[in-house]
Image: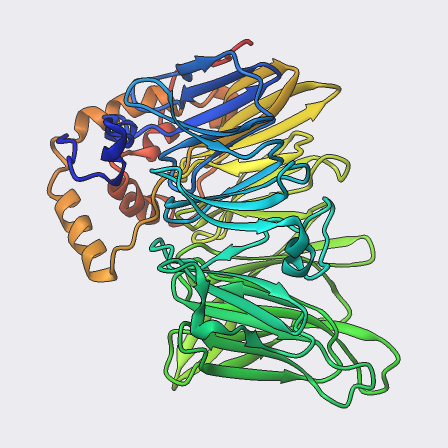
Length: 528
C-alpha cells in the first residue's frame, strides 16, 4: 500500500499513520502499568495472539491516544509529551505546563488543552498548537473560576473545560458559564462576534458529532412559570434552528446519534396529578426538513430507564428498562414517513441483570453488560438477526470495542491486578492478558469515515469483485476465530445470519463466518 506524503504529520519528519497500512487490518491497543507502557498489535488474519509493537519504561501521570490515533500523549510533572513513529514511538514535542493534571486533544488533533491546578505562574489552562507547541490561549488563575462558571464534577474542575465541535476541522470550541455559552473560533481564539451566546439559567450543552450545531438545555424556573427548553443553535450564526419546550422539567440527558441524524433527550416529567414522575424522550430528526420532533415513551410508563444508546451509523436504538427486580432490554427502529418519525419495537429481551449498552462502532452488534458488582454477565447480541450470540460471565469494570468492530475487550482491575479479556464480536474468548500494577487499557482509535451512502455502495461493489483474490484471507481467518468443539455444539447462528453478515465481512476484507465451520480447538493466552 502506498504511503501518502501529504500527511498533516509530515512536519515531524515521519509518517505517523503508517500503522494503518497493516496488511491484516489489525487494530492496536495500549496497556499502561506502573512504570510501563506497552503497545500491541491485536489478533488478526494470520496472527493468533497479540504481538508487541512497542514497550517503554516511563512513569507518566496519565496516558491517552489522540482522537484519530495519530499520537500517544503522556503527562508528567513538568508538562506533556506527544509520541509517534512509523515502527516505534519516539517523543515528538514537549508542552511546557508545570504540574499538569489533565489534558485533552481536539477532534482534528490540531490543539492540545492542558490544566494545572498548581502552575506557579498562574497559567491554569493552556491551549497549544500540537505540531508547533505554540501557546494559542492562556487562562490565568484569576479568571479561571469565572471560566468554569462554578460547575464542578468529581474532580476540582469539570473536564474538559472546553468542548470542541464534532467536526474534525477544529474550528470552534465552547464552554458554559453563568447564563451564557462562550463560543470561540480558532482563527483568532476569540469569541464569535466578540460576545457570548446568552441563555439565562442554561444548565448544559453539547455539540452535534458531525455539524457545527450546539444543543443547549435550560431548565424550568423555580416557580415553573417558564417551561424548560431544548434549543438547537447553528454556529457561527447563532441562529436557533429548532426549539422544544418541556413543562416542569429540571434536568435532562442528551444522546446524539454518531452521524448527527438524531438527537434523543431523556427527562423526568410529572403525571397529570403531579403525584409521581415518569421518564420519557423527545427525539429530533436533525437531517430531515423542518427538524421534526416526536415523543417516545416505553409501553409501561412506570419502568425506570437504566441506559439508552444509539446504534452507531444506524437507525436503531436500545433501552435498558426495569420495574422492580425485572430487567428488560428493548430494541427499536426509527422509521420515516411524511416527514414524521415513527418508532417500531423490534424485540424485548428479559435478562437477569443489565446496566450498560455497548454497540460495535460499525453497528449491528452489541454487548449488554452487567458490570462488576451487578452480576458480571456479558450478552453478545445481533440486533439485525435479533439473536443472542453468546452469554459470558466476567466481572468487568470497563468494556471497549476495537475501532474496526471485530473485537471486544473487557477489563477488570481488582486489588492492583488487571486482566484484559478479548472476545470476538460474537462472543468467543480469544485471549486474556493479566498484568500487575495495572492502570489502563485502551484501543488505538482510527479516523472516522465520512463516506456518503453512494460512496459506500461503490466500495461494496468493488470488494464484491475481489472474491477470488480474498480467498486466502478467508482461509487464514479460520485460525483466528477458532471455536472449541463444545462451543460449536452449543452455539447456533440466528436466522438470516449468513446472508446479513456476508455483506459486512466483505466490506472489512474478513470472513468471520469461517469461524462457524469445523475448526480445531485452540487456546490463545498471553501471559504477563
